Length: 407
Image 1 (cartoon, one colour):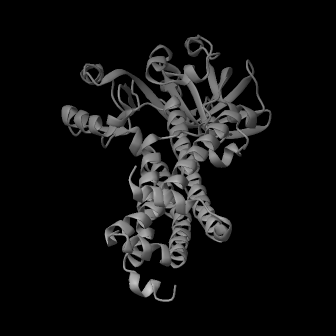
Image 2 (spheres, one colour):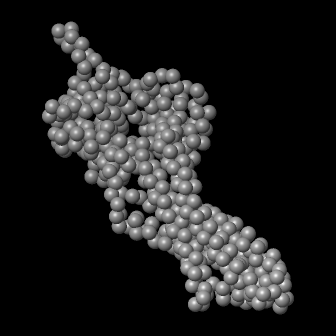
Image 3 (cartoon, helix red, strand yellow):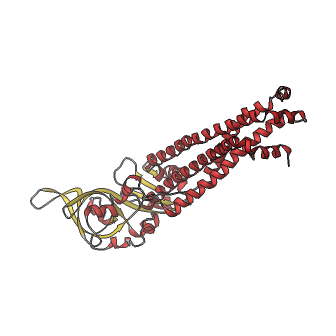
């Protein structure tokens, strides 16, 4: 073993007269440990939030929407869907209709977004039935008008499965007296879904595409086409490709652009948390600095003797660099382990509950990313290394003759 390492080990193991040095060393290790652990847990929670929200959004929302550019309604164009679904990146596609409506039941009225779908094709495009295995979308094809409500929407209306509600369309019709009235439909609740996203559960309802065309007076028109693709992270690139393929008459909107503000905010928050919590590691680095400076003053005699025995300045420099790095590495290792353990416990036992209407989800999600842990460890190691340079340089510049003059 390198003799410099042996000296470092001896310096780190305190004797009676070096209890204060041991204490400052432990404070330095503890500071790095807490800083690294806090970063690991915080970034794991941020990753969990981002992935959880993304999965819930994509449970009810397609990966790419094809909308008419400059028009409100798409005319039926099966050739457009055929062109797009023949692309190797696309798994499936289906038409859809979006429209605003008012639902009323038991003297309660609630605004809602109505989505008209073809049930058999919706199953292939979104994950709604995977999130809600008890829901049978094909019931929407019944000759009797049927609707599937979000959980919170049904709660606000005070209705349950099988009950009837009234649907008021913004489209108007004229009755036999010549009066213009909003179109009213009596419709039965065929299912109640829960997406996990409060915003969707509180405002979204599903009906058949045919019934939506009738309610909104669209004839054979549709709002657009929705697509499911193989790689969700290629949605932006594929949307550009589809626009070039179909021309300017079609606008392709990837899921990332439809939720851009939300994910941009989460990304910015993650970066800011990384920067803020890195300050904890910086504070711990000052403890390493002070520990090495204190040790330099305590070990002047030892340094002088080593130099008298033939140790060079670079050897003394390495001893104190190794010591500072040892403190940093011990803190980084223990902090990483502690952070991973806490993250695993949070993920498994869900100690903390969240208000779903504020945070979209009810439990704290956790996802440990190896790349984040690597970046945390590298950052902490660099900070530890920088904090050791000056004390190590100072120790290597001690004059042995001056140090031993009064011994």
